[in-house]
Length: 505
Image (cartoon, rainbow, N blue to C red; front, top):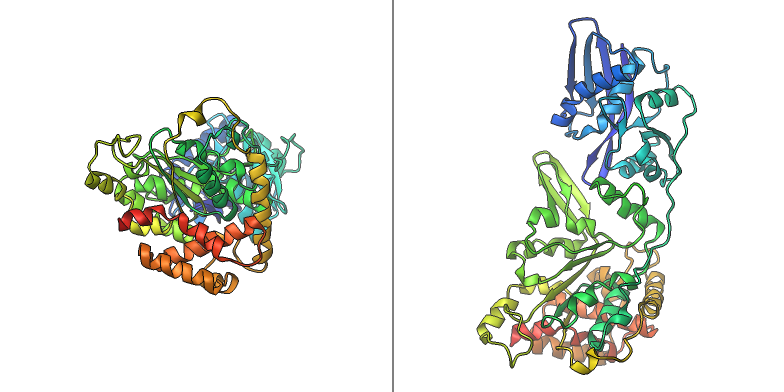
């Protein structure tokens, strides 16, 4: 007797539908699973057999063959327990005929028949919608997460017995669905707390308005980390599509909080400088997302940037440029989105001396330390901002600077101008423009061209740095409400190439 049910396997940050086919034939008791299962899937027969018996059903004492089709990619994880168990129960008549082929099922089984939550349910729901499967049965703990996807009827079950009753048309109480709520801004991370550093505050606003990459260079205690952690608070809130996109990534990574529902605020990731390439970019025998993907549509903050290993830093080049990562392994190729804002922070020397006069490092040592940030990587960072030590007058008393709410309002206005400019294009912000789009949408007047030509000659800028300056200038014009670029916009953008001057000097 043959029974079928749909399930799904995770491939990168997406889900691919899988047909779980069960054949029960007379013969000596045996349980065989084919279709490139990993060890967790091969071990499922013990969990399935025990869970079926403890749920009050009869496990057939026959030869059982499980086929996971298509068989051209690897299936991993315990999420196939529930579909295998339900297919067996369908083959033995416990689930009514015709109920299982029109539904997809994911879930891990405990030995007592309880259904445990699994990762990637949001991606599975999206895959069902793409393939026209209108019903999805998930663990009760994942029900709120999967319910965020329109066009798919999500059913929840806490036990194997509940799952059978649900498929047989018996009503089982379901948990409430997830709600997409606006982002919550942390009141403890307000720009009003930042004293002084007007130049750095202005650069942070420009970075937020155009989604530009940014690096702060200054002595310890100058406010680099404090400023970086307040970037997320002035960014626009996640849109509905972005919320689902980010939440699906976090679901695949197993980081989505079932009680909190979807990810409502832009991610802020701050990996330690001891991280590996696989931890930052992603990797593994079956590729899994790294920090650059977990920071998608948010901020990746790299504190003490020169302390990261050089090969780890250089691995950032491609995701910073392209906004995506492709990792090829023997077990398959994982394609991960990585459209994040890179924010770095660095001391001017290895010892972290407060001022140049107090520094005991030689000029060669200082140059070697900053030189750990390669020129190709710095070319991909739009804004280089040098922070001086804070004078005592800025530390004692007095009012703080402008708050995040006022800055966020200007950022939203600038983003609205960009959205109008990019209607019909697969571009959301100035930082994402291609060279062709940049030439078409951001023409420079002759005065600005002469200014930029002089800077290229004086600083030895590359063609990529030239384009970055024009993109930043376009964002400065958007913040000013200007329709066209002017020389003053380009002049301010050139000021944010401080490390290019260091490389020349």
